[in-house]
Image 1 (tube, rainbow, N blue to C red):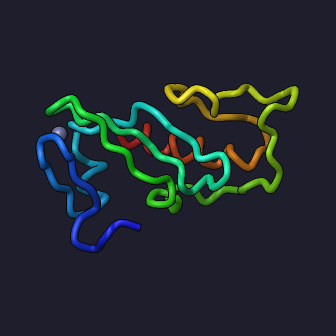
Image 2 (cartoon, helix red, strand yellow):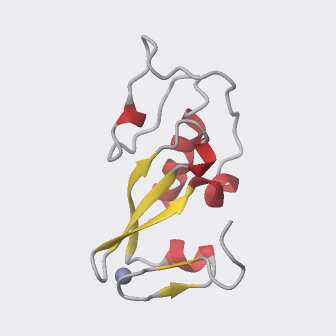
Amino acid sequence: MLSDKEFTHCAKCETFWNKRIDFLSDTATEIVAYNPDIKYLEHGNFVFKHDTCGSNIEIQVVNFKDLYDGPIYKERKTGTENCPEYCLNSSELRPCSEECECAYVREIIQALLSIY
Ligand SMILES: [Zn+2]
């Protein structure tokens, strides 16, 4: 987890966001990609673009886990017949309809997209 002193900051222009709500309500930030950690899903990164300076900010999935309170499936369906392979394409932000362990992260993405 990130420190209490700041939620995150932009390394390029040094804008700081003290709280997550400040970051999410900032109209200059938007989610643009998801880089999964296939082994530890919570350690995957969401990539946000900072429109003010054009650089990207990566924040781990674990920091947004509370935005989703639906079911988390136990099984991985990655690579199976019905898997749409969205998780293999970082710029793909659509939800996954499979009952796959990885699907809940994509639901968090939908929550993040609905905020912006
Ligand atoms: Zn910036």
